[in-house]
Image 1 (cartoon, rainbow, N blue to C red):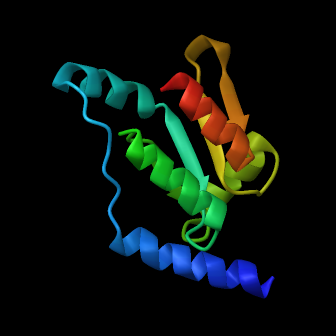
Image 2: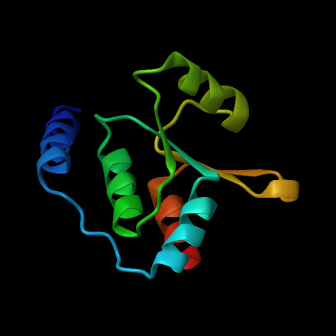
Length: 118
């Protein structure tokens, strides 16, 4: 437990100090990606190493997902519990239009989805 806490603190500092260089894309392609990525909501916590990892991967891919810190805003935590069914982070909610919503709970599943999709 202590090592996880220390790792989270260290990653949080690195996340704040070391910027992520996003993938270069054309303006049109990035605009299309921005519209698509706005349909994704990332529920995260600043002290969770997996959450930090997922956030940085989204930045690296140039995605502008809606970020929701569940520790700062109780409404986001409630959305996570009522929509996805569990108060676990990181969680990526993908709005698929008429097909409904998809809730991805493990960081491995989220990273796999992002790498296949983008």
